[in-house]
Length: 67
Image 1 (cartoon, helix red, strand yellow):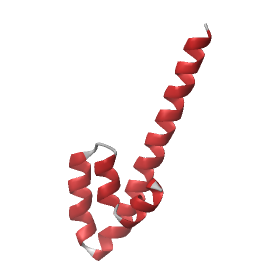
Image 2: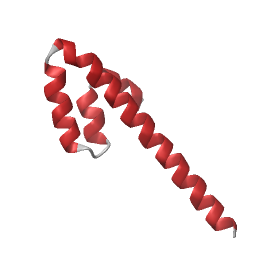
Image 3: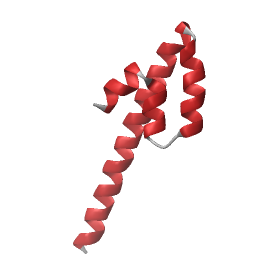
């Protein structure tokens, strides 16, 4: 779901991830038609990175709880 938001409204995906200043910059970039594609790619990369960080955090927590 978040990937669809990142492609359609990249600035909103960044804002929902708590990256307000990046979201504002992305909105300015998205206003131009040429800038929409880089903004969408950037937002998808941020969403993917955040998902990976969450998985790593959960893995570390589960390993620490096993001890």
